[in-house]
Length: 155
Image (cartoon, rainbow, N blue to C red; front, side, top):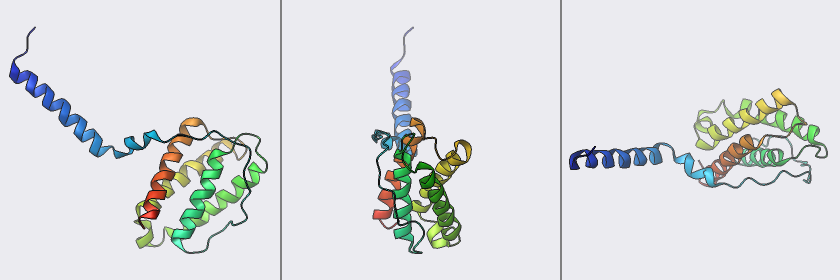
């Protein structure tokens, strides 16, 4: 079996075109390099629950609380209280800010909304005492990095 130069050239072109398309269409694949920290039982229980009704401050606070929740190990002190407070804060955040088109259209909001759905779904399915599985944690840490970037850019 031998290929002509034309067929070889076509094959190389298609491989290159596919690689370029995949890298532009799937930019989140570059974020796969995020390291997932080990789960820990040690954390400081927040005292700043609730909204301030300033989008940037609230988005950063909800994200930070979600990062703590994502890193909690089974048997962490007050894990159930943390989860209940966080779920209420996430619901309040989404129900308040999704009403404003200038906020709901921001990339930081849509990514945070996705992360909230993942974490709230975990709490609904498994309860507050069960830690997140590794695959879900990795995805959430990737989304947290995107949210952080978007917030820093005021987007």
